[in-house]
Length: 592
Image (cartoon, rainbow, N blue to C red; front, side, top):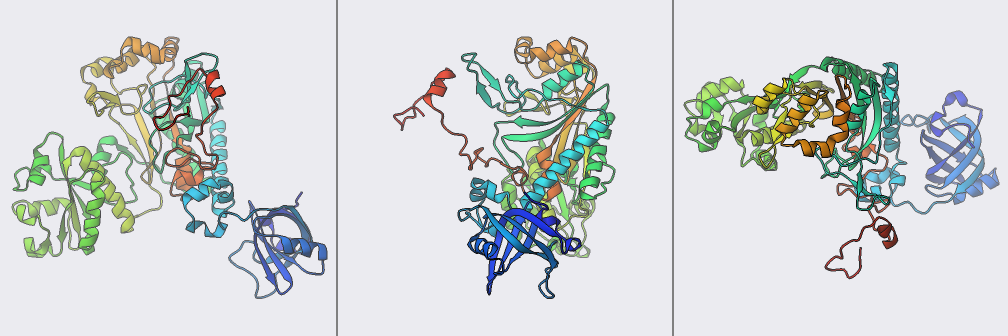
């Protein structure tokens, strides 16, 4: 129905006839001449409709915002003084000979160029309108380019695109499963996959060697800006590989992706151990664009007459660390109080600080309510922190977990507030993760998942599980975990020992993972892989604020779809077919 997209028009087409199809972005009536800004997925073009073409003029006259039109006309240069250098098509316009109204439209719930004044709930309810915005079109177009580049790279490197089931069985992988009742098996349930983890391992057992999939995953968990109940992974697995093989091929993929899509040349990815990341930045996904690091001062604080510091310094699980902010002495007391409130979100009970106004004056050149408690160690403290005139030192003192989370979040907040970024992109690999961590009940839990291979033998793991490291690796970019993976367990004895460390009995392992264990018993090769969060990757590459910005039809933070009003109720007939009966709400006399 059309010859060109609106955004394709340029001065090389002058005097040619074109046919456009799209929506009315804006309509203007200038003294009997009607101007229509026509919009489609490629851009906007200005159309001029003269009274000399009465049928076209009549249709243009009744056209309103978001009407769907088909226009035929001749390309001409815009008159001198009316050209728009801010528009890709701003040098030309279309003189219409025909205007056809393909469909009318009700008044839209918001104007596309005024979306910033509209709440996200309205934009999500009318997502099909929101998606007409050029910013949203550009993001989804870039998402398509990203998946195309990824597929091409992996296919070129011998990976096969293989789908895995969406209806599977519930397996404990760290989050709640979405359950699907079975009509044909009364009282039994499928689960939507949290990831293709077990199936891709079985594909390695089957001998497919190199697998990939752009896979839908489902997790029923509390949501944040970078989480959705359904999300997309770039899932990769390979056999007969070591860590360096997986990291090498996926790093090359990301570097090529950035070069092709953004014309950005990423540097070689440095490697950092998990221990160093937590020690220096309090995070296993540090943002290396920010040149601020923690300095441990536990040893200096053990004997100070300030229990806020000496208590954690002497505690087994305590930590006292300082964060030096160059030029931070200019911060006002009001700003410091705001940062104190901010770190309280992460469990910190306060935020001690010292302003370094003039080191040559000794303690008199410092400004802080805590200096008087540290006279004996203050010079050593300033030297260790590398403090200079004009700096501020922020302190974290508590359990190590609280210090890491609070001071780590403060570091990122300061990086943004004070514009401390030293580079646009800062990738890295984080390696040598602990194999296990303690959960809230004090039991050992897998830091990644129970199929991650430890870097020691089964006997060493049995003897000292808490100090075992895993063969896991995470790719981090600008403080966001892009993807994580590991070398997997392919040996039955090792898998059994990991289950034992996690308190999973042979019977429970057989019940939950029996099909995987059977597969490992039939000649499983050494294998490993990595899964990227596609939504996070697109969010970073497009400059989006949340992954909702780069998903066509996302859910809200309460896991609801405002547009379709999902989740919703179903009929009693459907429930009966599924052998389900719902309890009545106390405040409702009908089944819901």
